[in-house]
Length: 339
Image 1: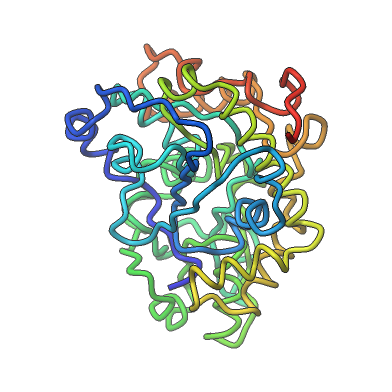
Image 2: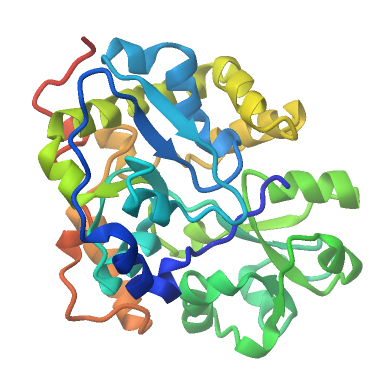
């Protein structure tokens, strides 16, 4: 499967269970030369390109880092890998970070590589669905995770109702058969798949363009790791940011490693996804336009937190500042450079 994602992790439901399997323990300190391990949130794809690029081009090595990328996928719970000490970093999003905070999990976000969430809705052309509000009352195929991310936003802002929801089972078939329906997707993948399988270009509604404001492809680690080994975290963030800049310029080295990990990933989809990363400004818009790739700000985090409180997804008593750290970002760095 490509371009399909399970939008929430098990800790949303099983936060207490995750606390029991390792979050209370303190992992060993990394020894000199011991590899850093990054667990991704899905099968290898262009949406992970900057990390693969930093391995392929030796950017991590120039910072004195050896990095191992462990590919995610169905059935892989990256939070359990992090809790159990099998990963040092995982990829996530703002909703993940707030859910972890609410569950009492000591997770911190140290960089945000996608300034826009790639989440979108897809609709059929030529049937009057030219505006997002036109989908009100129409069948929409969504995953269960939508209930804790973008669906409450659509319900509040555009008057969508729960009666519209249909269970998305990772197949385009139901959407392709019903021209009055819509479905979830990522701007970097599903429009390509619709063109390949359905023979038409869908109407694409990027939710970020309508006010849905979380960071995505965020870099998360444990608070203990961030506090105990700040130099490693700062180097990894800086090198990953360079990797993403390099990937945007020439993705071929990273793509070769992506296809090694995920042989099902086609050249055509990689090319489409890479162009979409640039066309939608996923990495270079927002805070990154002035602060550089990977940037985050207090203002953006607080605004998103307040939105989620208003939607009754997150408790207002939480301290959102415990969900992230800004001091590892390249623009906040103390001059960390390649070794």
